[in-house]
Length: 264
Image 1 (cartoon, rainbow, N blue to C red):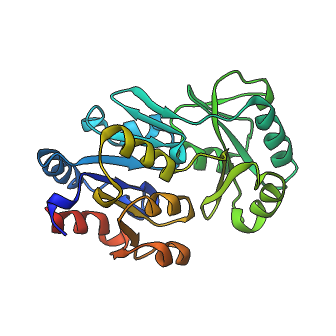
Image 2 (image 1 turned 60 degrees about the vertical axis):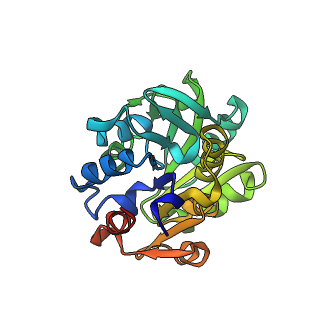
């Protein structure tokens, strides 16, 4: 591999670019500058909210591409490049079903803000890590916004406690993905990080062979499939390791930065 092969790099955040405490290594900013000098575009690709990502990368917020909310919203220089929304009728059905799951905490994700009705302190603290612009409301069904995702948090594990119920009702009509051990996202059936990257390939003029990406969990699967240089983190879910072409050291070891240093 050489620098000539790479035009676009996308990295997941939690479990990938961020360390075990959810922090970004300050060394990233120097590596980003080197990528920029080589005309390589970098994108933060995450289930996190756009406003949360922008805060994490604040010093370079106008120079980085944000693939937010698991690919449902792509922003650059505070301008929307791509969006994949969910209709109001679907939102109502998803919320009503999620409310029936004991222990589930629902986050309604709109373009302007995230919205919650839970009063559970543990849930509110967990949600605040990923949704920096978030409003507490009495009834999610009364919220007015353009909606891009419904996120569900369950502290006993979403793969076990949420996915079977949600997928049985919406698995054929929506994208239902376990995005972390305690998080699940329901999106437009055409939405994914991979779909967002494919759109950027077509509009920015780089190819599958010129794309590098890093991921660790099931919501990264399509992104890795759209990237020739697909890296599973050492700490990745087994399914991600099976479909990635390459392996990077774990996020505990700053694996993304180590690989980027090699190509630089």
